[in-house]
Length: 83
Image 1 (cartoon, helix red, strand yellow):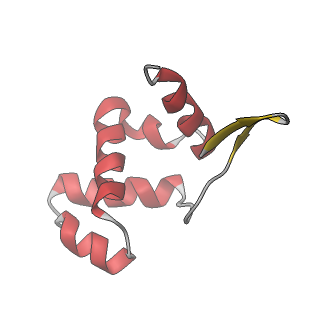
Image 2 (cartoon, rainbow, N blue to C red):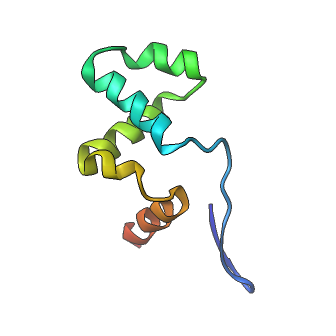
């Protein structure tokens, strides 16, 4: 969550942080047909929206989608949102 206040802009992250390698392995498994998304949700305790978002990023940028730091990616996404 991005907050603006007297101290400036701060970013608070909730939840777990996954490595780029983990995200890439999950997305590759789904796209290759090795596994469907449902077992991946259950086996790794992930939400369907989490995997959906990773797939979306992968379709847009390929493997480079997971090479930038998570915080930077979130800030970049927030900057592109219409006001």
